[in-house]
Image 1 (cartoon, each protein chain N blue to C red):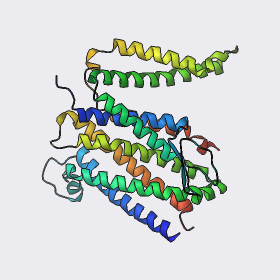
Image 2: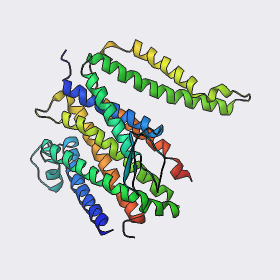
Image 3: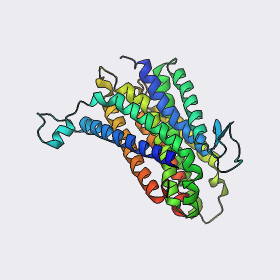
Image 4: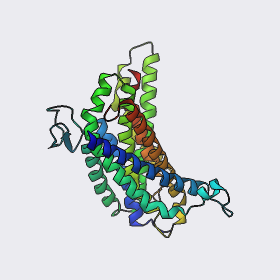
Length: 173
Length: 156
């Protein structure tokens, strides 16, 4: 079986990692720089607005691109099957977290007794990591041999879904 | 204001060119013509899709950079007006446009790698899918940009 080229691994991992880091830096507001458009000044990392509105978008992009470059470079130096396993695990964990947390909130809403612990994100995250690890472990061997190029579409579409979800307050006011 | 309006028009024109190129490529790769091209639609589908790659990448990057530049002006002029007018849905779709544009930018290295000659059969499906996704991204952003500009464009 032929391994994927280093260029293919690099570009696939770059797209996947960049989409994931972009979502994280956007939702946790972790820009690498802050731009103040009214006064035309740039600050390093996050800073509050000084005069007029502030823009973090450039900082989010820079953070995600630099992070993705580092991860993509690392991915070309490790066995391809490890990269495939890591991405599969990450995607399974994300989907499992979504299912578990939605389920936990649904049960919390319907329960006749107070089940406060179900609102804990850490609990759903822990359960998601265990589920993802179990599925990854028992996944057929051929799932983890080659890096699947389809991640280039799947992960960015997932990232867009998360970003759209966080913008729903604009549409429900 | 004339400067920013000019930039916006150039941004829009570049977006039209990009829209044409990516639509041509997406159609030709998803609905290739098997026989000799006859009518307009068949000729539209019969273009050599690989020849569009560099043009699409360059147009996307240039359009993106111009949009990112204009965005600085939008942030403290048009957007403030939209918020004061309580056009929250318009602001929301524009926020989504910035994310969608970024995701499109993120796809470009892989898009380029999948389309590198000689075209690899191994990446045929990924090539088709990433081209379609990029086409959807360009169409979405083109329409959203139009809507936002119609709501409160430069100079209004």
